[in-house]
Length: 220
Length: 407
Image (cartoon, rainbow over the protein chains, first blue to last red):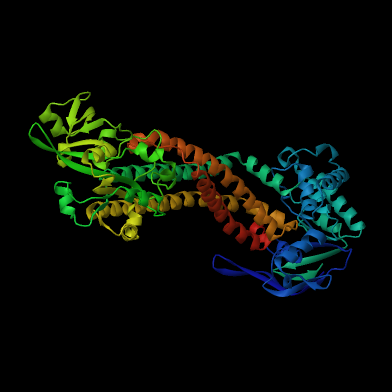
């Protein structure tokens, strides 16, 4: 994964705000990177740009040698479906679907039949310790359980890259620790993990820390 | 998990929103259906009233003028009854009603009256060959005589006879007498009346019209022909023609078919019919346009709001790798289901409203129109799809994080 002089600015109340300013970096496959920095420093923007979710104003983003934003939106969607998994701070579970069905979504998008979807989703929820919560809707789960459903959903299509935006931000320390353990486990399996965090303990779990200040990257 | 399940779950998760969207579509379509239904039957009623103006095309012998026809309706010139058959068997469109007649002057109690021979409708219908020519069926919508509407108000036979010379049944020795004839001769229904040596049974006394018809005695055409002793002849054919066809050259076509007769239009009648029918058609179209616009705006508003409310969900799906086609299908399938349900239920509600309110508001009987269900579903689905398509397409084209509003 490589960023080449990426800038991203947007208009806020008539003023141009630079979220990323000539950011360049390279992340090796299988790395575990923590991105830290004060609020508004551009951490989430960096993650979204890396994941093909937000077009940069200038610069290029490469994934396995392909320039992400030179692809069509549907080609980028295909890459997100097959290679990238997102973990959101607010989990972004679909509220009207059960835990099992939420995990089935990426499998449905990948075109798998329903029996295979159920089989894999059940196994993944078992892996994150939610085998007994398959038919619970997000509102019926604790915050930590919701984040674990989100992690199971991330793993559904076996992505090579996991992008996590403040994955422990809304969790108590103990649950946060469990989530970090799971992320570390995913990294040990050979997946690249990029995690945005405010929490120094979480950042300490990464092999490399990048610091963002006013949209500029420094290696921490 | 599959698309249908995703749509179904979402719909029933937000029950309140589903109910309001459904209600918006239902009410919009119900209004369209009920107004269209009432308008349709109003047009029919107006057309029926216009028919009461009487014949709008006359076939007369060459030597007779329109003035002669109106003043006394009696002339010595005749033409063969076979002309009626020729018209009936022709492929001319727009002949809604044919009424051949033969009039003879008669003297009763030293007063002059007119004996008019007419052909009852049953006689036409008895001849399958003629009926097959479509004389008594309405060939086109819009003007002229309308097809019978079951349950609808139908003028009494007497009035039909007075205005249109149409009567269902008339026996060989039966007669109907005008108001003046009845008053002068002191004749009542059920009495016998001797005319030209033949005894007729008076089956009805016609209401006063203030025209020469008040001095007429109507009898079966073939009986009058027998009394005249001139063979199967007539001296006029009154035609209720469809005014659309009249404008399209019906008169010229009849003239070509009957070169030895004079064919004239009763301009005032035709003009009134054309103008009124045109006005009704325009009004109906304007109503439909307004209602589709208002109903459509309300449906579009709800569908747009739904897409807007679900932008976070759209962003999540896109982050998980959903392409624009999946997002579009998600909303279009929902729109299709809502449109179908709204269309069918809107048709049922609209029809019930029209049938219940039509007689009270417009004073006309209104019957369900099954064809409108296709219109209702078509309009409903098209509006729901169009209203969802544009915002959904817009959302599907955005960067996922814009819909997620993560930044």
